[in-house]
Image (cartoon, rainbow, N blue to C red; front, side, top):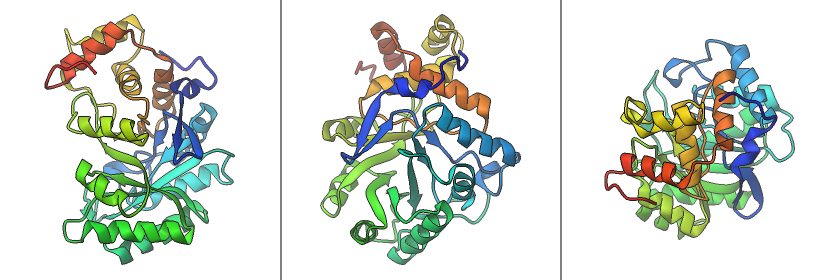
Length: 296
């Protein structure tokens, strides 16, 4: 299925973040506009810039990034491609991870590190305030309350508008909410890895955005005899388009952020917002991918 609709992302529907930010439920993850191993500049700088600009043309008004992507490269490219930012574009970034090389990620939740990370993100993104600032990953060496408390201070200082969490448990979400209002949770979730099932439901119950990272993984479901491959043929679509369509139907507060550094892949992902699975198709995929065979 190719991009034949001018702004297909709008078909994903609107989600309110924190009550005042209105975003379409299909955004862009800006991790893969960097180099291999999420390290250094992209192999094709022009394609990365074109991907970001094309995303906005397709209707994307939510871009997710982090200081650790590159590191720093993703944020720099976003500013280069899109600043001054179009009205209504929401940029979410993250802090709490350090990089020592390609594929290497180390948590650092020390308040002083988070403050340094935020200041760097503001400078690179050319912003006075980040729309949504997310704690990238809890640090086992630092009290969770200390890390989240620093994000609360950022919000009080006006440097952060809304606070989000990433890679957290339900207990950590509840713990953080005693310190600062939380508008989003970003955990790994896809048709192959559904460990965050209860978190998806909890976010829906509370009206929080759930951002599934690595959303396109489908495992064996796209193989011979798998439901995704069969359904994709009916829609003349790619399996990952069906995976995205399923995610968007899984929860009304799902905010999918597939990542890519390629314009053709971006356009393909965007068209997934226009696919509305029949109930029996949704249930067939759900049964095949859920370890419990439950239909939700």
